[in-house]
Image (cartoon, rainbow, N blue to C red; front, side):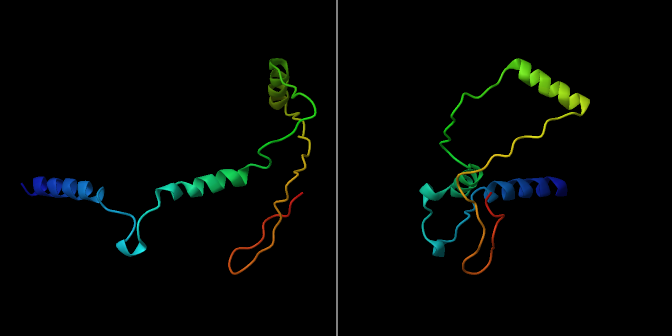
Length: 105
C-alpha cells in the first residue's frame, strides 16, 4: 500500500511539474517572437557568407567522391585548400566580460 502511494504522489508531482512556468511574474510577459533567438544567433555565427559568389561551377561527381574515399582508405588524403573569408570575425572586446575571438583570416 505504501509503494502505491509513492507511485501516485510521484505521478501527480510529475504532472504538476509540466504546469510550472519558466518565467516569474515580476519578469513580465514572455515575448514569443524572441523564443528561439539563441538558435538563430548560433546559426548566423556559423555562416561565413550567406550569399557566396562563385566564378566557376562547383566540380563534383561520383568518380571524385569514390577517389576521395579510396585516398582516405590508403591514408593519402589531400589537404584542403585554404579559403579566405570576405567577412572578418576579428576579436577584441568591449565592456566587461568576454573577450576576443580568433582574428579573421
